[in-house]
Image (cartoon, rainbow, N blue to C red; front, side, top):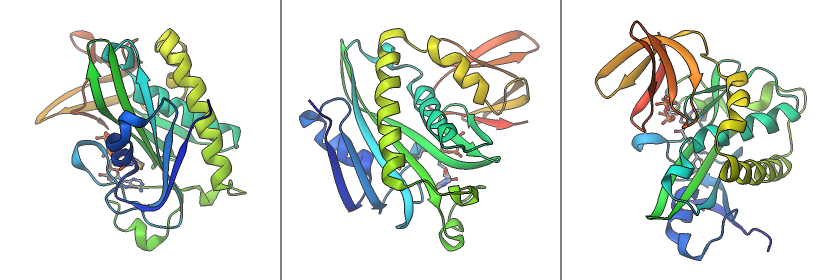
Length: 243
Ligand code: ATP
Ligand code: BTN
């Protein structure tokens, strides 16, 4: 059976749509919109989602073996995005643990994973991707960190083509991830990791931990070398920053 695509001119959030309709969906179904009135990032933050040439889409995916099978998923999705952009000759692409894609050191795209349901042996997730293609200065002003888009490229990819490539790459990578876990993605992640072997800090609530970034483990945790040795950190409340 082919995957379905629910297309909207305007929507609150494509992640919200998939969450609402999860019961009727199959793995690989997507929701795409031209504009999001309430696009969201992690921890209640906003994803600036104006009309124009940008991608906002979400894919539904079921992990039959439960939550443990989905650990590290945002890293896999980031690897898929990097692979497609590299195919389109986008240079200077990098990733920041656990969910951000940077172009020339500025945020180009983000991944938001939300859970729509969980039982002992099944975990249903929404994978949201936002990617700036041609952000106007005016809309860019409402983004409270350095951002980038694809306008610096010699030729702008066609939006539909980009979406199709991402959809295919995601399906391929998610199937591989479901079968083999994060291992096949570790080297792909580390090749693109902007902070590997660099001094970083992890913000964990009001705490800060400093150390050298040593990549990721098989669960998708970030590895930090501190005076006490290498430790792994994982969890939705952690943010990585340059020290
Ligand atoms: P971290 O994930 O490490 O906490 P983050 O600050 O990037 O880092 P996220 O929740 O991943 O936080 O992403 C949301 C943030 O992304 C927003 O707070 C804003 O700074 C930024 N942002 C919002 N919209 C856009 C956009 N269209 N392009 C680039 N960045 C954006
Ligand atoms: C982040 O960097 O925090 C993740 C941003 C994810 C944004 C995308 S846009 C499509 C989907 N719908 C949403 O409301 N958010 C994600």
